Length: 306
Image (cartoon, rainbow, N blue to C red):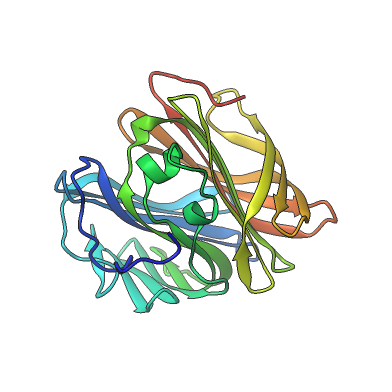
């Protein structure tokens, strides 16, 4: 569905799926400061739990990490503001801007995400029928958008890092059944020429290939007709070293690009792990971009799709 009567930044009631999830996700990378971050709040209403990812880095090394996977359930949402473990996420203008703040002696954050491309549901734009594992088991509604990210990060020695960057944010509600997905990999580059890409390729335990995919250009998101990718993993088989992607959009334009890892962090989820990377991306004409590179793996080890 491209529209919903529910407010994805407000409270979205759960159905009876035990792993019903509502989440708010933000990332960014500033190539001048060589600094970036990954922030996510997940709320599991039927499990009466919430979780938090809050990881920042500079020069390929961590600046601060707070990871809480089994926090008490909260009724707060992005509309009005949600605070978990000292981290506050708040919508400023519906579906257009939001803030992330944190203020403790060791680390402070005051950042704002302002829309560049509108929040658009990549699942609906990628619809592949009733057997689509993403739509059925991972999220019913998953709008993503690109943003200008501005503000400051302050370190415990008093150093202030001024951020003027780009990043993605997304919203989600629906099941988040990690156990249904054997493996997935994604590229979310934002290029210096304004092009943005959502390219997610999943491999379900039922043996299917599943996609969340769209291309952002000329101020809007359009569908994708084909994705090809080759990922080179490190010896642990769970860390991306580099990649080659070819994405064909609905206009017939082919976007070929490579990726190189800048930073990596792992987020454990019991019988699944998500490996979050910040990547440098390069189009065939040399245009640079930056953004998320992500992959996930089911345990016991079920492979990385290569």
